[in-house]
Image 1 (cartoon, rainbow, N blue to C red):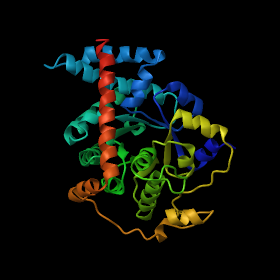
Image 2: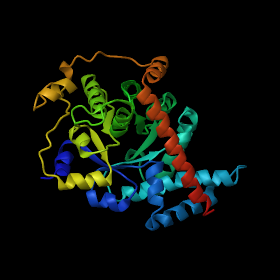
Image 3: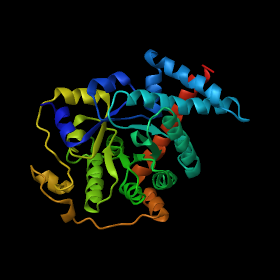
Image 4: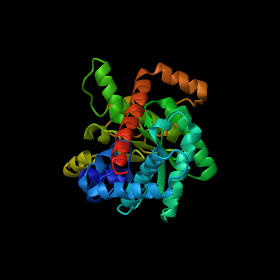
Length: 338
């Protein structure tokens, strides 16, 4: 049995791509998209028609006094919806559709944009139950998600999550899903510390997700953990049993060819701390038994914790900037067709 098959028996495997062909090849349950992935897919000739469809929709439906810019914005939203619609034809589960990263510090604008995306999906006959709205894990993004979840029953996927306090704030807000970025955490430590190589047991991204997963299970939070942004298969094997794992096509292909045993590392009833995991071949510690004090995160605590965490501060800001940059590039592709 391949490692990928073993993963599918322990975690929900999610394809981290906007490429329909890759999704069909690996048959994941869910799929995630973001501006960078949609940009990459949009540059492929086979997806050019989707941009044309989005532009045509925007020209027909965009109104108001903003003219050209409003058409571009409407086309951007429509492009994400048409990609999501096509992806949902190939998977049994959900697709994540991201709100513009440039709204990461504006709760109300994020809410409005999310409601618009869901309305478009519903007009296409797609239930909101099959959509996860992706929002950056800023304080404002988390508050937007809290409102969408509690007032509209819209499921949210909190992205660009790099530390424990972000995760706790998300859980306390009742969001459906978080996406901690394993590989980007490791990237920061490789760049900024003397240690340049890690195993699946001491990788700082793996350690971070393990802590969050254990805490959620100990205190019975409904929020699920979807580990993301993997740099290698070792990181993935260090998190077997995580609620969900979103994996790039390149790493899915590698996992499909590997046949080593991939034992469950994380589970609701059998969870180990990082130190225990490093010394035991089997993880047989209940999350309920772990010494994990309960914490509460308000806005002041959240902002101070980010301020004190150079890695999380830098990677969150960098992630927002890069998603915004790719969104602007995508807008230029759209403008060329208007």
